[in-house]
Amino acid sequence: MSGNETPLRLVLDTNVWLDWLVFNDPDVAPVRAAVAQGKAEVFMDEAIEAELAHVLAYTFGARNLSAETQAACLAECRRIARRECGGRADDGYKPLPRCADPDDQKFLDLALACGAAYLVTRDRDLLELARCRDPVPPFRIVTPAQLQAGLKR
Image 1 (spheres, rainbow, N blue to C red):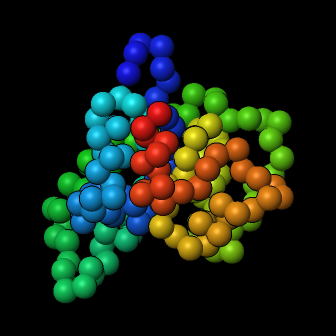
Image 2 (cartoon, helix red, strand yellow):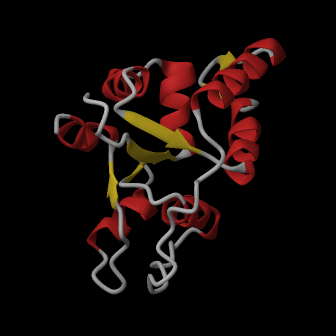
Image 3 (cartoon, one colour):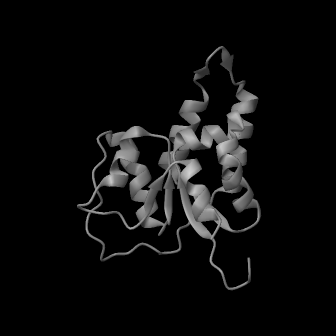
């Protein structure tokens, strides 16, 4: 990446964060590599961090994460993600589509506020909005696997 290129701005939903921090999912490896190389940057806010902290306490199959592991996951997330958006939101943009699950609207709102290029998700309700034509969000809603094409630019 040359000095002139702006890193790709991303918002990850909670499931993608879990894939990164807990499950080491290979679909997330290109995202992890792009962040490490400075080609992408991930944004999060307090609401998303609070949801992630809550979900990290769940039982994953037969596996529970210890309090120490949960804290380490959150610390890694805080290390990776940026909090300040730098005023990149398009103030003239019309309203975002409404997600069928109101708990997921926070990801759309953050993606808009941060001027994200992509909202990366595995959530069915959010992915359904990728087909939305009125209003069309100013960012793409994709799965981690679909993001790989965007990272190869």
